[in-house]
Image 1 (tube, rainbow, N blue to C red):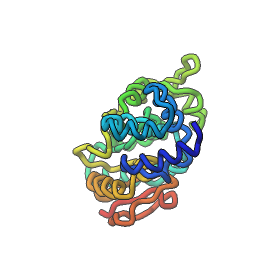
Image 2: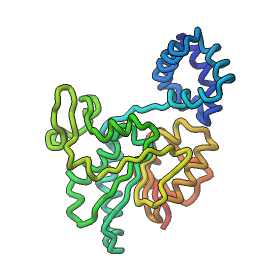
Image 3: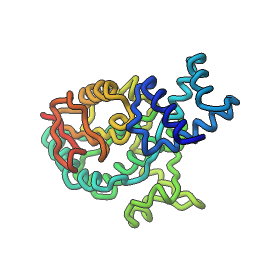
Image 4: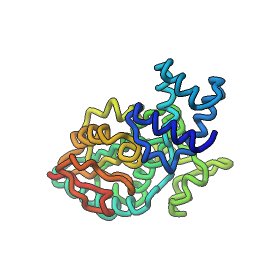
Length: 271
């Protein structure tokens, strides 16, 4: 499949899925390979034929939507974020929790893929000594792809997924099983995985910390970004923190959030 043909197809198809081409430019190769395999499955000669097939077969849009899911992830992705969580965000949340006599801090990871981000949060909490302050951390990780959730619950990863972790954490938290590194059960038990599509549903509770990185504000259309951002705001407690991707920005229509750390990547909701 020629790159030009794939680009042309994606520029046409993505708006129908409430996504934007700009977010897919650097990762289009992954999607184009999937499209090539789908054409073979359907025995279609090219993307022009697939475009006609989509117009004649509305249910195929659901399949195309799944082909456009980007699941690039690894432990401690963007280490500066975790540094800021350790030095600033968690201490402030713990201090507020102790003032209010709250025993549990809640965290929501959106688009958790195969679990690298929520497990990274839990490792930071467990191994950096934060739990010594008497406050517990509960992590909810939501992901639309059930296969990703199954992999996350198994907790086994290739060496490339843990390459950014400090050596001490690797040695303490993982067991080597052939070419895989499996997170020990005690570092997995705090994380709850739930199948949800952020475009259609969200948890019914509120959180002290929400991570929404490299998904909504990268791949979704501007209108959908604004809608989801408002819904996220409703689920963030006053004084809570929101973390987005390093190349992302919040929609301009969102108010009540102030950038506070890591450039404009970590925001705090006004109390």
